[in-house]
Image 1 (tube, rainbow, N blue to C red):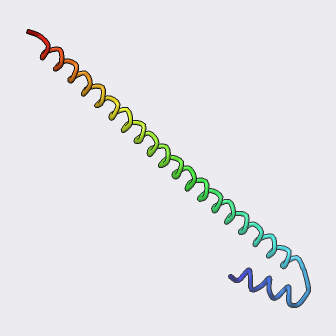
Image 2 (cartoon, rainbow, N blue to C red; image 1 turned 45 degrees about the vertical axis):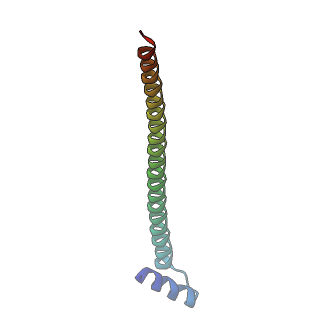
Image 3 (tube, helix red, strand yellow; image 1 turned 45 degrees about the horizontal axis):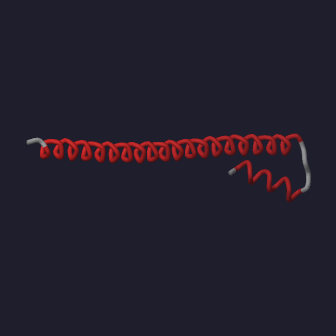
Length: 88
């Protein structure tokens, strides 16, 4: 906050000296660090979202395979029962 106040004073007075250049440089460095942090957080959120979506997709695929397996087991059971009924 002090950096911003000092920079505001410098802007109001219109004089740029070595100290004001240093303040501008410090503020730029802080801004860049904040930007990097925000980019990192954003990337992390995107990665987690993709991971969740991937897990949902795998779950849906597993449910489909399970349902197909149940259908096949039911058909097999019915076929066996029909064969047993047809025997004398």
